Amino acid sequence: MDLQARVKRHFEDSAQTKLRAAETLSEPVVHAIDTMVEALIAGGKILACGNGGSAGDAQHFAAELVGRFERERQELAAIALTTDTSILTAIANDYAYDVVFSKQVRALGHPGDILLAISTSGNSKNVMEAIKSAHDHDMKVIALTGKGGGQIGQMLRDGDVHLCAPADRTARTQETHLTIIHALCDGIDVSLLGEEA
Image (cartoon, rainbow, N blue to C red; front, side, top):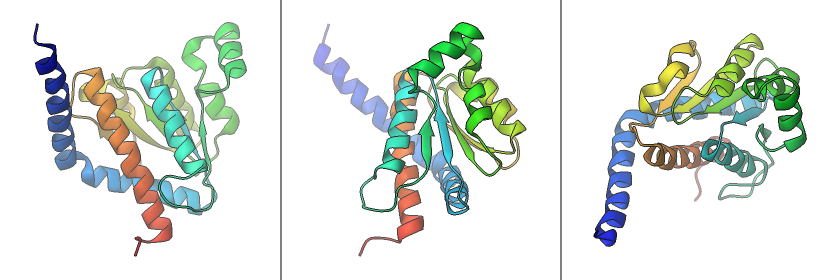
């Protein structure tokens, strides 16, 4: 086994996936930025959810908005629905794991807020339930998926934004999602603060 060649292939495959994403997703990412900025300016917030690595991405996004991305600015309203272990375990124990995010969306979401729904497969049941709750609350959804979008791609509405990584492998999808998240954060900052001199 040539382990060095295998490692090199990871970098090359990741780069190629991101180049494909640059061609297909730049316009919808701009739409997602505009949607988020509109909500934030109007006093809304962004709720983010996902499982596993996507939970980490949800937390990463919320941290960049509440803290800062690359520039100092006012704190922006974002909550990762993946972080409160008491809420997660109580809901999973008393109800079902499928509703750990949707119950939080119903409790915290308001019309004009945004749900950032992250699922590499596009088929995560608890993320799909969160999307249903967001729609019930007149919230727009920005969905990050892969593998063709799965069921989530089919349940989005007009006004929602689907950012489907052009990848079938989970690793490539997650790497692309992280780049998208950084592009969203940068776009929000530029929209609110202008470009740096």
